[in-house]
Length: 230
Image 1 (cartoon, rainbow, N blue to C red):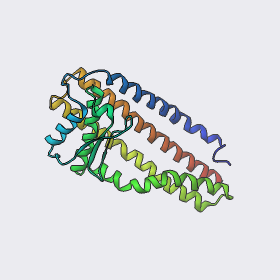
Image 2: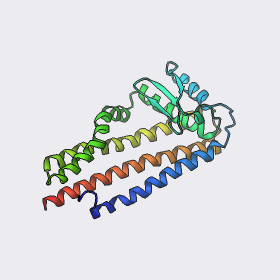
Image 3: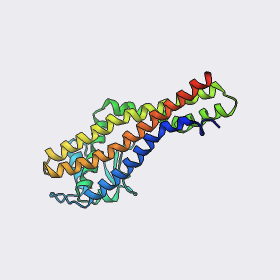
Image 4: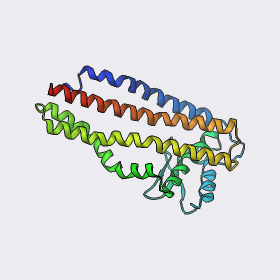
C-alpha cells in the first residue's frame, strides 16, 4: 500500500493547510459582509437581473437555488442561480456574489476563451479526478502495473489542467462583476466596492487551494512512478 503510506504524502500538507484556511476565510468573510447592507437597497436577484438586462442578456433567467454559497451560472441551461442569502440579500456580499455569477454569464455570451476551454474539458476532467486516482492506486496494488499507473496519471492530469484553467475564469468573472457594480452605481466606489472585492477575493482562494492540491498530488504521483522505475 505504498501510495497511502509513503513519506511523499508530506508533499500535500501545505496544500491541505491552505485548503482549510481558504474554506475558513471564504466563510468568515462572506458572513462578515453579509451583515453590511448596500446603500442601493437592492437585492442580489435584482442586481443580477439589471446587469443581465444592461448587457443584452434579458433572456437569461435568475433563479433561486437551495444551499449556502451554491451560487452558479449554468452554461448548458443558460440560467443564473443564486442561493437564498444572495437572492434575497441586500448586503455587499450578496451583490458581490450576484455580480460575479453575472460575470460568468457574460463570459459565456461573449465566448471567453478560457471558459470555453474549461467547459470543453470538464467531462474528462470530472472523470479523471476520481478514476485517475483509483487506477494509479490499483496499478501499485497489482504488482506495479505500469499501464494502470500511467493511465491514472494521464487521466488525473486532465483534472489538474481543469483546476488551472479555472483560475483565470474565476478572476475574470470577479473583475467583470466588480466593474459592473461600480460603473452602474449599484455599489458606491470605495468602501462598498472594497467590501465586495474582499468577499470575491476570499472565494478565489478556494480555487487556488484546489489547484495547489491537484498540482502537488500530480507531482506526488509522478515521483512515485519514477521511484518505482528506479
